[in-house]
Length: 422
Image 1 (cartoon, helix red, strand yellow):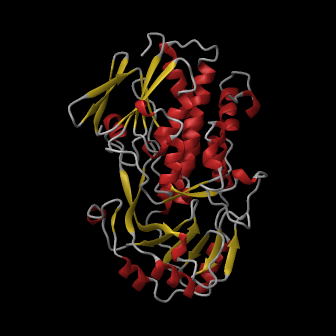
Image 2: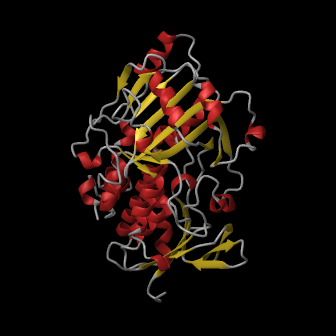
Image 3: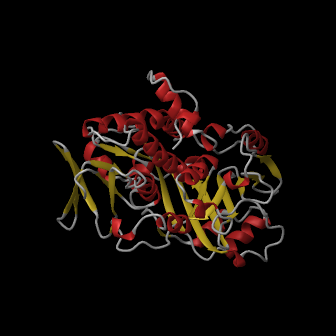
């Protein structure tokens, strides 16, 4: 590393970590390195949705290849989500965009591995260090350190924890933080779309079927893929028992068929065509008191705001986090000259922009834990779907405007998103 650069070490090379690397490697005074526990970077994982806010951040970060219609599926109706009745298959509600004039910014659905691969094209391979399972992290004087299971370590000036839901970076600095079992489980599958093309009346758009106790989601993805997601509550499974449900472990499709046996023919046919399923027990974390530790450490993505995947917002939140870090560095060191004493100013500005927004989501999720979605009647179900809260505040969030508002509130005399763009 050059003596005139600050070294940024990123814990995790998933979507959040890669996005942060893409953002910060644009700044000439930063040297960026990533540390990933996997032994290889390959296309794994289930489906992921990126909403307009996340797609705009991808575009601003220069990841234009991820906006391509080959890698990302956008419904032909230009409706972000269609809600149908579990039994009759009739449409109950069609969500609408509020202010998304460009098709490339309309909600897109990917195989997670394909989005990861698109991001990976923008990060030099020599910057990513594999087989680095993080055990703990520490701050000592003017340096941060990641300690790995192989008894090696990495040192830098700034640490970004992008190591996901069960973040060891977060655990190192906020050991009291708790993840809450939501009582829900998701069974996800991704596979070649040719396996479902024979199904009569198969919707062209992404569809969420709501039932009295269960939900079911299905959608095309980019690159000719398809996804099915069964979602239901396990009210008799305690938090202790839930620990036996291993994240991303192999599931059994037969109990899913039994659970949805009385649903409409399209859903039943989709489940019959689903070749496998994997289990994702659902957790959400309490809001952290702070995202800034030791003046040199912060968190992004699920490490910062573990919201349990509500509203399929996780990927977009992580992308907005990454872009906000770029805005914050660019503002504090806007003349291109860094001062190590101002690192905390950068991280605080990032936190002030992102934390209130993500806490709003976390509080909604935490409030819903334990509130059964078991409607007493079909009429009650229909009313619940029709009256579901609008989420444009989340899916169309303008992170540049939020950043500018923080600057203006702090007395920097800057207002409006045009003042903060890179």
